[in-house]
Amino acid sequence: MISSIHRPTVATVDLQAIKSNVKSLQEHIPAKTKTYAVVKANAYGHGVVKVAQCLADQVDAYCVSNLDEALELRQAGIDKEILILGVTSAQALDLAIQNQLTLTVASLEWWQEARRFCGQLDQLHLHIKVDSGMGRIGLRSLEEAEQLLVELRKDGAQIDGIFTHFATADEANPSKFNSQLAFFKDLIANLSYKPALVHASNSATSLWHSETIFNAVRIGILIYGLNPSGKELSLPYPLKPALSLESQLVHVKEIEKGETVGYGATYKAQDKQYVGTLPIGYADGWTRDMQGFHVLVEGHYCEIIGRVSMDQTTIALPEKFPIGTKVTLIGQNASKSISATDIAQKRGTINYEVLCLLSDRIPRKYFN
Ligand SMILES: *Cc1c(COP(=O)(O)O)cnc(C)c1O
Image 1 (cartoon, rainbow, N blue to C red):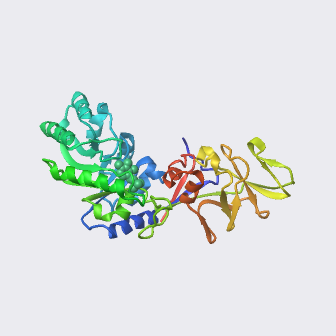
Image 2 (spheres, helix red, strand yellow):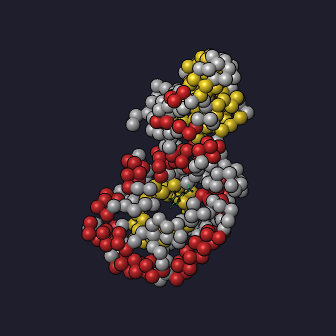
Image 3 (tube, rainbow, N blue to C red):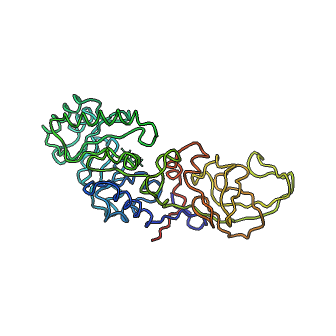
């Protein structure tokens, strides 16, 4: 999709905030720890190429979710290590080798597929994924891991790392986390061959379980300045949200008592009132359940009234603001602010989803 640049709805990304969030983390973990910046899903909606470029001097490598995301980075000239976290289809392994990508191996079956399709197994760089309790992908026992190791080494594959992922590192109750950690530690201690890189820390683990860092971290949401737990746990040091979302009033009117606004006529004016219209809607990732939430205009919280349409949103205004007045949907406006976490709370979801859903129709602008 082409982004709509002739429309005053823009997501602005503060690259200095991104850099300073990574720096803050690095000041709080052992100096020799390698930093993998997780930039999957278009850097959580922030724009992958710009984010990767701005972090080039600060991080050791990038993580993406799939081969196409990795290729996008290579095509943009990013030459650092890139680890693909998901399962890569065996038919595409030659392409991965040509582009010097590092792959996740999560099962012996996958390696058998790799043997069928890939003529240069010794060129593959791999990290072994251990399922210590997340339940998505990975080896589920020491025996499985040993069996795979034997086969990988037989074929001369380059086993650069081994990793796992925690399901509950963002929660106050540590019991599941502790059992995953014990499983992973025990497996690592008993492996007959230990890869150079061992990593288990996403943002939440890096923030609240920094004693658990092996020798690398994989940080995502923290880079973008958001709390992985939403509002459950407080941050041990401040982070700066990097993205703000702004639009403008493109239409302002006064309606009479009893008039309705939007599809389904779900909103009926209780009195004469001013209504403003914004050029953003659910096709931008500004979902229909934002009805009843608010945006900021001239330092006022203004309620979203009526249904959110595909391309337009209507708000109640305290007075007749001129067309072109700035409207803040995410970020700071005068002394007030709305965070992606606030929006997530209203929607019954997580801040990650709020950011990732911002569609390609919204142009991303960068400063700093
Ligand atoms: C997405 C992802 C991360 C990053 O998670 P954050 O919570 O954003 O830090 C790390 N590791 C794996 C395996 C992931 O899928």
